[in-house]
Figure (cartoon, rainbow, N blue to C red):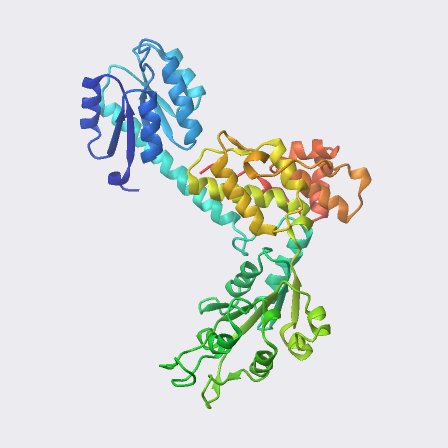
Length: 460
């Protein structure tokens, strides 16, 4: 971060001192405020890295109550902001109290600009180091399946399969309800494959009219049909060297299924209106929200095409079956949308947690994402409530975590639930499970688990 990009907010009601401080920090982007209301407006508008704030602010400049209130509101809205408080001469008790409340440093009047500048520079340097540390920590914690939150048994199994299949060239079929993240997983297959540097081309077979789909897939020559004024390259050719994703392949017309089967067998195509065979090297990933075997029985899908596209089949569990994963995914989405909306939200209320865990989620991850996005917008306080999410709290209770009631696989599931609820805190997890810390560590080793992925992320 260059000094020109450093943003400093000065909160001071003395016009003479404010003028002096503006001159002192002329190399920075300086914003000023004379009271708490103005300070919060400037904080929201400019997001300064460091705030230099007098503790004695109007309407009672001789006291410190307003200064402490301003400090508290600043840190609530922007927890990573470095606040340096300026106090009266000999007022060390209030200075230390400000440090205890979250200020990073203090300075006593009268002001020596050279010393104060060193203190402010140090605050900027600390902030930059902490920011870089958070960035690096975030990189360390990233899953190789970027963007996929896998905490339930079902999704962990899916991710393990993706990691095994990705380096190969086998045609893969993703089966799952609408909104379960089929395209996200298809992109993960591409991203983890040797073809990652080449194109990922997606086409939704249900979204394109039947008379246009063949041309979209295989391209056409000039004059092939009315309106074909020039040669056009199809999606299959565009994906050459990379990955072709055929979404909702169950809706592909039967006549086109025969041509797709030939392409998959021979890896050659002919453009509509053309006679030249064109070889294409492409990895094919398909997806559908329908049961292919039912489609075959109904005569709507070719069985030979099904066997060709399903060399590897991956079944994606619906959100309602991802017991442990729902809350982690909800928290991840909350982090995403509160950053976008720039709102100081700390988490979900108890009724929101229960609603997330008991709701059936017919729209799957897509519905959860929409609910969280809307909940962040509607929330008035620090917590997103069930009402903000537009959900009702279910009557059924939250799943028991008593280890005496579960064995083996169910035992590992209970540990994951407890880790989720405690944000990875070992002591709280052990307490919830009714076991000692050493016993919990033994169980974590037994199931190849750890608490790293469950810790509460720092606010943005």
